[in-house]
Length: 214
Ligand code: S3P
Image (cartoon, rainbow, N blue to C red; front, top):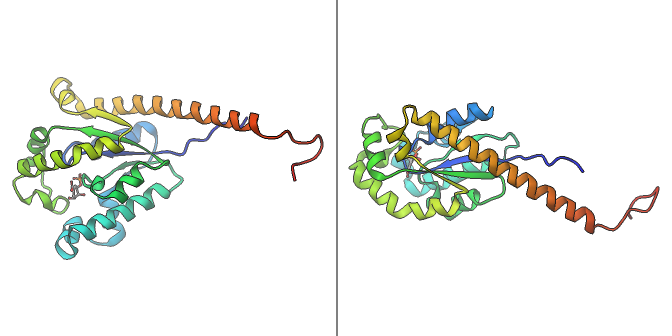
């Protein structure tokens, strides 16, 4: 029986500031895969920053475009690590892509208090227009509105806060934790795929000797 060739992307989801990009980069290096930041891909593909999308076309248009971009990324045969924008789960189409067969989804689950503190230390001007308002208020609302949606698409959940509290190099540790869990998920999937192929082969009618099936 032929080896099952896994072609699965890995996507990170979670609130702004949960570490999708930094952890994603480290994880991609560990997996020997390209890393793609979906917001950057959107800016490159469309020639407009996230802020320009919000300012000129509105949030709904941005959401539709980010779904298009994710669909393109997931259509690639080259397995990658993708950091999605925090709001990708807000649309049904975005969630449908993340629930699809080409991608394993990891939720970097972080508390709003933790991420608000982190994003306050960074310049997010072109990338996070929603944080022009009070970041803590925005992130509290996002957590309330989105956490159940992240849970709905996630194959794996990793809690970010305790790692940052307890570990000296938290990003490296988080990447390692995801790497190990991902390897396990892939191994289980490969085993399931092999079992399914074996069942299909057992159920198929036997080929006549020296001939082929009509
Ligand atoms: C958003 C998150 C941002 C970016 C946009 C909207 C959100 O991406 O897509 O500003 O609604 O949570 P990051 O999560 O990478 O910051």
